[in-house]
Every structure is written in structure tokens, then in C-alpha cells.
Amino acid sequence: MMRTLALTLPSLAALSAGLAAEAWTEVAPLPRGLAGHAAGASSGDLWIAGGSYWEGDAKRIATTVYRRRSDAATWHASAEISGGFAHGGAAADARALWLAGGLGASGPLDVIRSVDFATGAVHDFARLPEPRANCGAALLDGALWIVGGTPVDGDFTRTSSAVWRVDLASGDVRAGASAGPAWINPVVLAFGGALHILPGSEWSAEQKRLVAPREVWVLSASSAEWKRHPLPFALPRGLNGVALDGRHALLAGGVELREGATRISTGAWLYDSVDGKFTPAPPLPAPRLAAAMIRDVQRVLLLGGEDRVRGRSAVVWQLPLSAQTSKALRGQETRTIP
Image (cartoon, rainbow, N blue to C red):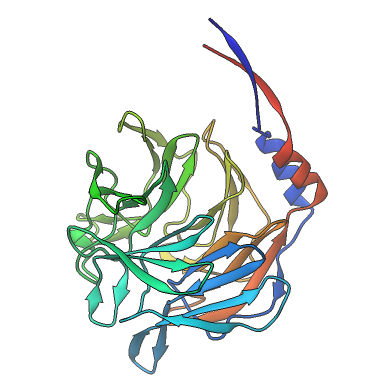
């Protein structure tokens, strides 16, 4: 039997056209320059947790959770993270900002923590089978999924292909699938019952350095089966990314290789999870790596990040979602399915 459903699936062309007229603008900055921090938005509040920064030749791991009203300019300390958190997986739902693994003051972490949006408190929730820094994370089907990363800080030859699923009701941790992409800092996003894993960096044993992956991995949560799709063109590695709706994501920054040299990128792209297409989006005003990206009502925010080697920025940019873009995100498409 065939059924006809109305799905919220705006076209990439309509969404791209809506964003094309917009530009990133600067808003109230972070309390300090940070990279590798987590961020979330809930009920009119913005949150940031942890991050890394430099003091001379020493890399420090931040321990503070900050909160501010979305329409205000001042951040307020809400809680402290024991041992700190930076460069791990992060995802937010209606009740909490979830922190997966990452780096603490003593090295890679094996703990899953939550930052409670109601109280601001930080809670230890579960333990991973091993420490995992530079991983990615997303929420899907009542679970936190953790992909990629390394158990040893700075040793990218040890990058893991394990995928873990953390049940948010019971705290149970188990393998979520067979081997996935062994990537550093992948962008992990949930669309339509599947995880989409986007670059990310991959260790090349031949070149003895991190390189940009040339494919997207997609994991079905119901079947635990992987599909792999080649990228239509080379994207920077180590992208920042955020879902805009149930189909599209905005990606920005990362590291690109140009004329034999690496540099932090200002590029931005829209990703369509249904057909795998990418289209240019308004570029960033300046290069950014290891920033945090969130959607806050009618705008996308990019918070902080690395702007140069050992550089940490406190700048926050917003990209408005115009009336045309919002209309595209609400647009209806009729589809006949078996």
C-alpha cells in the first residue's frame, strides 16, 4: 500500500537563496577566547562549557560553565566542571547539554556529563569503555552516540573506529554499530533516524599527517548499517557544524590545504542530508577552527574558536535566518512512500 505524507523537507535551493542575502555579524563576545568548548541554547538562554586556551606555552583546560540570556550581553558563571572539559563530543536536548569524553586537566576523559539547563549543575552520568578525546557526538532515539576520537591526547595514529551508544534513560553504554570512520573531530548530526558523520580529519600513515576525508558516513539507527557517500568536492577537515532542521546542516571553517600549505578556512556550506548535496553559504568574516555552533531560534551562532595556531578567539558571530529562510525551513513537500 502506498501512503502520501507531507514532510517538512525544504529544498536546498530555497534554503540557499534565503541565506544568500545574509551575512555574519558580531554580537556579545565570550568571557574569554576559547576553542574546543561545548555550547547549547534552551528557553532563551545560551550556554558554554569548558574549552581550551593558552597561557604562554601552556595549554589550559577551562572548567567553567557560563550562561547568559540570549538577548543579553553578559555571561554569568553557572557551575564548575571537575577537571575541566575541552575537545570532546557535545550535544543538547531540551533538558541538558551533554559532554562526551574530551580532554581534562590530566588528559583524555572517559566520562559522560550533563549540564542541567534547569539548575545549571554538572552531573557525571556514565563511563565510556576507554577515554576518548577529539570525538563527535549527537542525540538520536533517546541515546547519545559517540563517534571517532583518540584515547591518547595528540596521538592521531590511535584514532578509534568504535561507535558507542549511551542510553539517556538508563545510562547503559554499548557498541552502537560495527566499525565506523576513524576520524578526529568529526561533525556528527542526526537526520531522519540516521547519523551523518562529516569531516573530521583522518590520519594518513603514508603522509604522516591529518588529511581531509573524502566521504560522508551514514549510520541507520534501526539497522545499525553503514552507508558511505563520496563528497562532491574537497571540504576542509575539522569543520564546525549545526543542524538547521530535520534535513539540512550549516558547516563552516575547518582546515584547508591550499598551494601545499594548510590554513584555517573561512568557507561555509549548506548540506542536504537527503540528496548529499553541498552548496556555498555566506563565508565567515575570519578563519575559525574548533568553534561551537548552535541554532538559537531565528539565527545561527558561531562562538569562539581557533583563529590561528595557538590563537583563541572570544568573538561570537550570528547569521540571521531571514523570513525567506524560515519559510523554506517550514515548507512542505508531499512525498509518496511504500
